[in-house]
Length: 218
Image 1: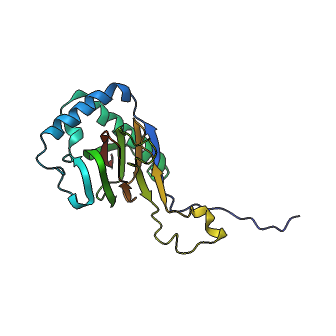
Image 2 (image 1 turned 45 degrees about the horizontal axis):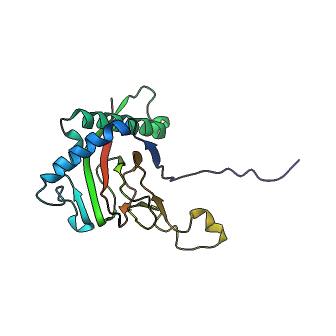
Image 3 (image 1 turned 180 degrees about the horizontal axis):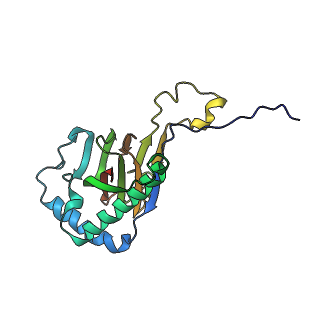
C-alpha cells in the first residue's frame, strides 16, 4: 500500500474573463456605427461623460447612456448583451444562489469610444457595478502589427510578482493579459479588474461600445 500523501488542489481567488462574438454583428454593425457617429457629431467636448478626462487622449467618449437611445438596433444590442451577462453571472454564481432564485442583468451605464491615431486610455477599473464589457464594433487597424489599440488587463494579485523563481513560473511573470481587438468580439469581465487601452496608431477609427451592469434577484 502506498503511503504517498493525498494532495488536493484548491483554486481560490481566480479571475474569470469571458470572450464571445456578438450575434448578428454583421447585421447590427452599420446601424450602430451610424448611431455612434451621429451622436459624436453633436458632442461639444471630447469626453462627454466628464469622467477622468486626463486619463484619456485622442478619443471621443459619449455620455453613459448610449444603449438607452430609442433605436431598434441599439435596443437589440442591449438586449443581447444583457442576456450574455446574465448567462455568465449565472454560471459563476449559481452554486452560491438560493435554489429558487431568479435573476436579471441590467446594463446601467454604456458609452462609446472612438479612438483616433495616438489615442489611449490609462489603467482603471469600474466601481458601482458587478460585470463590465467591451464590444469591439470596429477595431480599426488594431490587428496590424505595431498598431496597438490592445486592451490590457492587469493581474489583481498585487504582490504576485514580488519574487520570481522556477516555483512561481505559473504566475506568468508579466502580470498582464492583452486582447487584440477582433471585430464583433465581446469581452466581459468583473468590475474590479484593472484594464487599459494601449496607444493606438492605426489610420482608421477604433470604435468600441463599453458597458457596466448589475445583477438583480427576485
